[in-house]
Length: 145
Image (cartoon, rainbow, N blue to C red; front, top):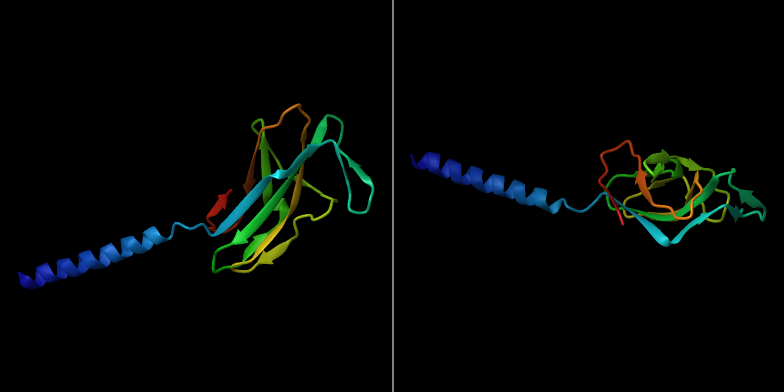
């Protein structure tokens, strides 16, 4: 009887240790920060080479400024084309951005960060409400800020 009680106590201590380790894993693998003050909604912008880029008729550019930080022990693939923007229940994929500081394609190492701009061509409107997401092929826990 004493052996059974000791076994149960040891099992309970081990399970409690596993549960407390699971609670520590609250930190995200990656953080994507959208800088609202660096984001613009415009019918045209100036490319880094000096020429003007115009949106198609009835559309405008949603240009978002993002920063991505990798908190994981694994590499994190960054591509502007993994982003998506939802406007009025329609999901849009990025378009080429020719302005300064386009978000680069990089393999972000642990504790690395990168920032830049991602561009979407969305319907023109007086006011726009949007949500941004990021598609990844891994089990990353991504938090948006």
